[in-house]
Amino acid sequence: MKRLTTPISEADIRELKVGDEVLLNGRVVLSRDMGHKYMVEHKPEWLRPLLEESVIYHCGPVVAKHEDGTYSFVAAGPTTSIREEPYEATVLETYTVRGVIGKGGMGPKTSAGLAKVGACYFHATGGAGALLAERVKRVVDVKMLEEFGSPEAFWIVEVEDFPLVVSMDSHGASLHAEVATASQARAKELMAQK
Amino acid sequence: MSSCPIPDLTPLATVEAKSLLPKDWTADLSAPLGVDLTVAVTELIRRTTSRMPQDIIDALAAGRDAEVEGSRSANTLDTMLENIKLADEHVAPLCQDTGSVIFWVRHPFGFSQRLLRQQLRAAVREATSRSWLRPNCVEALSGKNRGDNMDPFGEHHPVIHFEEWEKPEVSVQIMLKGGGSENVGAQYRLPDAELGAGRDLGGVRKCVIDAVTRAQGQGCAPGILGVAIGGDRVTSFEMSKEAVLRKLGTPNPDPKLDAMEQRLTEDLNSLGIGPMGYGGHTTVLGVRLRELYRHPASFYVSISYMCWSSRRMELHLDAAGHPSFS
Image (cartoon, rainbow over all chains, first blue to last red; front, top):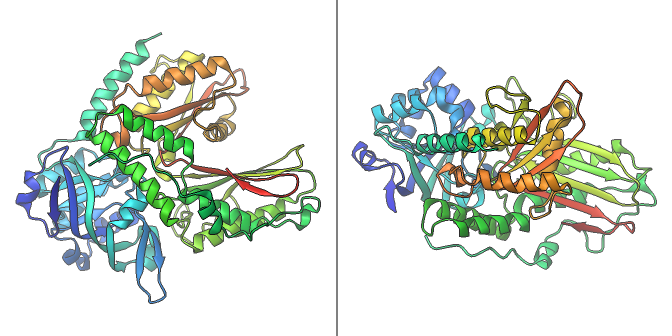
């Protein structure tokens, strides 16, 4: 099990291979559908210091707001990443992001972006909302909460030992593509049976 | 990572102690217009969002035991089991996607569906304000979120199916259906030349194999498949969801469908998709088939994919109005 802490260098990312299990520490920025559309259409400069050498997490958390105005996460597992396929490569390149956390994997456009920028796609266990919320130690800030609503806002958090699997690396390999190819071949065999 | 033992959920007495319902609360079903289910249904939501049904836990644990020790698939199933334990202990949502909220309400003669609808909506609003449900209901085009899980245009969310029945009892079943799993659902029209699927049970089998292969890990595998055969497009999808309510381990009353459910479970668990699509044996926890009527010209096969975090529960009021949750 490897440990990674943000900011992450390109050299550290290039060492990771598909199938590696990783514990992530440090700052992570949450963003999903509305955030990705916004980042590509507006390329806001204020996001640069937050995203450079950092990691984006595809997640719409359940958040508790406390009486002193601070927030904490109640449930925070990954959402399906493929919806960000049209945007992700541009986002990675615009802000030099070193990693994307999500579930289900992404397509060839993102894979090319990961290779070009030097970034990995990290898979988190979908549905493990309670366990992953426990590993989010602090909610540092939130941006665009009013405009996007809670699940879609840019939440900026500190994570500790966040458990991940590298399912797409910076060398073009994809665990999802391997599993898809093998399962499609097996499906063909099954369908040929009476 | 060491194997997570099958989680023992907190004793029911502990859950009861945190109940929103006053001790000894009952509903007077002899005066149905005076019955208020708001608090009881809020409590139903609290339990459903944080407490996994035992049959699902057992199936996940059996899946874990079928995987190679120390493999990614075994570790992933362990993470799922540990998550179930944590959510239960903290009364926290099992998954941040608390889903679309779907109810099936069955009641005796004399109840007002208008009043019941208002009570269920109030319960969903209350559960959302307590962070037991994420605000998941947005305007289709703008994506604008009111934050209270209420349909901004009408009363279509939460989804409520009503039925008046003969029994002197009330049943409120709930399902929290996540968006990722909903997105991999599918509807086929047989015959399907591309799949080589005809208008028979073998054709249905091919549709299910195709849908699960297309879904890969994206519906949060290992999933449960609800499959409706026949109906019109709408009824067919509706019944495919209802089919998922049948507990794992409960046989299909139709022997030929029961045999096909078992065959399909074996077929699908040989695809190698595995938990979260990382590879492995455990691709599905079960398949639920349901046969409907059809128009002679149509033959639909509708498939609802329910994620491993299969959150469903029933609030039952017996004839004396005593509540029980199962």
